Length: 187
Image: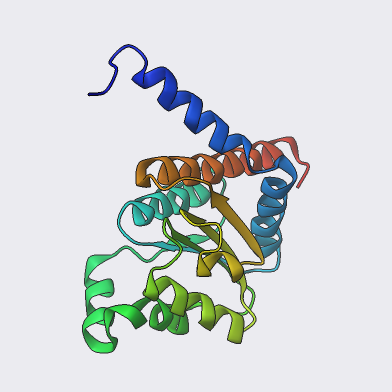
């Protein structure tokens, strides 16, 4: 039985500890990657499955609306199911990138486990096409997705909600940094 008096304090402490494990300089590198992509005329493409798809969608919307950065998330159900039906679920993200990604783009792939085959195939595609890739993963430190990213963010947890919360917080904090930098004219 969960201790009702300490559950939330322990929960917040664990999230806080996970958030602190990624350096500010690495998050700054992510912000600069997004800004550089924008400045060279590229777009940021974000993709995930399940909860990670929701994280990707939220980040894409905030990049466009709040930061005025071109971004897209492949969450449209007709598009996803069409590609999955025609090419197989394991290949749908790779095919979407074939249709939409340009060499000037930045691709952000999010997978809590770092082992989703459709995300791994997309990562392989980015590498063969020399498309800049940022990965967000969790669970095992040696998960395969982590090895693909030009920047690789890893949440040291095996709990989906913890990993997804941390991924979302890192992404949204980065977007807020970009918004502030653009407002201040430092980018």
